[in-house]
Amino acid sequence: MFKGTALLAATAAILLAAPAAHAQWGPGWGGPGWSGGRGWSGGRGSMLDSPRRDSRSSRDSREGQVEVSRFVSTDPAAAAELGKGPVSVESESGQGSWVDAGTRRTFEAAIVDALVGAGYDTLHPDVPQPQTATLRISRQVLAPAEEKRSPVSGTAAMEVGTYGQSYGLGINVDLTKPRTALLSTRLDARIVEKESGKVLWEGYATIATREGDDKWNDTMIATKLAGVLFDEFPKADAIAVPGTGREG
Image 1 (cartoon, helix red, strand yellow):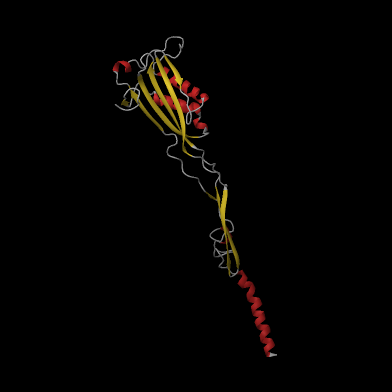
Image 2 (cartoon, one colour; image 1 turned 90 degrees about the vertical axis):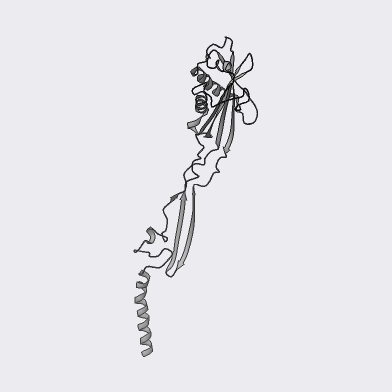
């Protein structure tokens, strides 16, 4: 009788203590749960962590940058003929990095406008053209296009504690598009005296832009490079050895 009574008392004590024990905060993966501490709503033990935006590589510092270099003939008499009279415009073609005929025409139009602003006559193609502006336009890849990646990525972890399991999930959300290739467009221009073949003036300008960027289509690039190249024409950055493009 005594042993039976003791066993019943012990069993009752365990049953009464069990609800209280289960109602306590479990140590779990993230510490306090249920109604206390950070629990489900935050911290290491949260069911779903707030999405984190994972930005791609920072903007390339070369984007939109323009470089220009211009040279003028060492012959003062030849240089004095610059910026006056009729002039014709033509562009050269080639293999490899040279652009197609349609793109060349876009640059030719931009150069014609720049030459008019510099004082040349481009409106009378039937009259003799004592000078010719010859163009070369080329492109090369400075940085390849970024590879496509999944817009959502994350990690998950589970920990078993004294009072059950804790589950954590971290998510990275990247809604940015992969960057297209970074291209360098170079415009070379040379003004030659037809009769003598002397190079009176020459220069080049380059710009780095993203492939397919609406802000930098061929017309905008051509206008930008032509404008920079013939800014304050016939201003030059150095005296050049005629026909070489090198400083004298």
